[in-house]
Length: 334
Length: 260
Image 1 (tube, chains in turn yellow, red):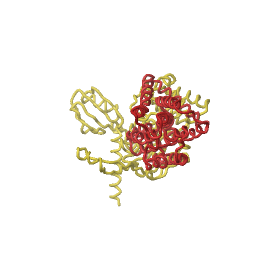
Image 2 (tube, rainbow over the protein chains, first blue to last red):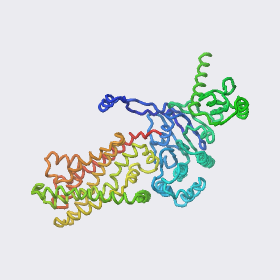
Image 3 (tube, chains in turn cyan, purple):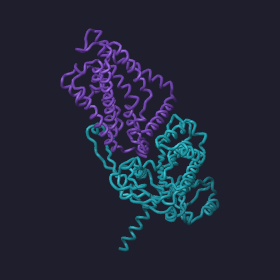
Image 4 (tube, chains in turn green, brown):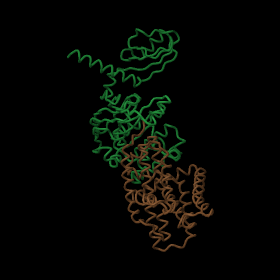
């Protein structure tokens, strides 16, 4: 369904210094800088998959997605999606895809989303009956039947995002690209969006989503492509990523008595705020959460604790560490 | 075609609803535009009142040229000239992506989104000025009306070409709002009788960049003063428009979106 081969994108930008002299000089002469945003991506996606693109800011996720949607022309490489090259057969291609860009709205700020839906109906030439049926189904699923009649500017971020999804899916696309669809949303809105994606996927829609929220990937994707600095550093199932990373969590812990974190198996200190306040990495495979809490209570009495998934930067670090270890081993065996 | 019209109607309806959210601002905008456009012939009126004139042209004839110029802009601005501001805004913000995701010709989508209700003020002022100027000259014959209609269509083609060139530049010169000044300084040559300029300028504005087509040539036809080279200039207007279309689509490839 999606075949990407050796995809490159290089942007041309200009740099200048920040001093007055350099600013003045930049009026006449600027230094051209070539920025390789995507460096030779190759991968395939089968129909009905949910593939998560994971990576830190500036990794090349959004650029890749823009090339896959036909918005940007690549510097080189091939992409075949639904039998089309996105930037060459744009009109035919975009009729069958949907896109939600978390930071670029398709809704119109001053009028209700419902008006924008009707505008999309005309743009996609959707039949009346099909439109009504889809709108009814999607709005019920996302619970926006009432709010879609209010002006967009009066809606919360979560409500707007739900309406963005309807906007992107009214024409019943078979592939949907999501660029950070849960960015800035609260837990409840995130859950609603995620369950909507799962439901649509069960109906056969293929999803490609970019995110730097590991939870999005864990809950939605069966396959994850980790991209960093324009290159794929990991492409496998979410299970493989979990096995690789172990069951690691980021824990912020505040205790009543000063604690000594060193020497506890499965615990790595990330940052020590004070003797009673620390950020830790907990490997729950080595030290289960229940045992960890028990241990902490016994040693220094827990006062407060928050548990998060590992931040993406940490995941990338782990992946690179792993890659380097493999390279060292192969050099030694040679 | 039917689908395109339905699409156009739906988008215009949405734009109308969007603009009606701020009715006072809309009313003030239209009023200011009307007042601004009524100032255009004031300079001509002052020139003639002071005893000076454009050689070979009466006050009413000069006013008619300026009225046709304002009318042409009055049609162009609400319906298609807004592609310049639409491109300026959406390319800078990176939200031009949204147009590229729709299964319609991109230029058509840009034009629809550029539909500007405020600019109907220009159409009204153009219509009023045209009616007033026309009442001061002898009634044109049917043939002159036909010639005028054809040349007026060409004037719209020239304005369309200008909008394409300016909008196209904005894919490369992101955020250059001065393109409007470029247009104003060039197009003003169409507002005066072509014969007041030197021969070189006359030929430049008739055959190379057909600015004379915007006001002067259609008005001359209506006055029965068919200017030299009007038909050749008509051909040039079509070529100019074609070049504008090619330029715009070529420049579209320079679109780089914005950081995500």
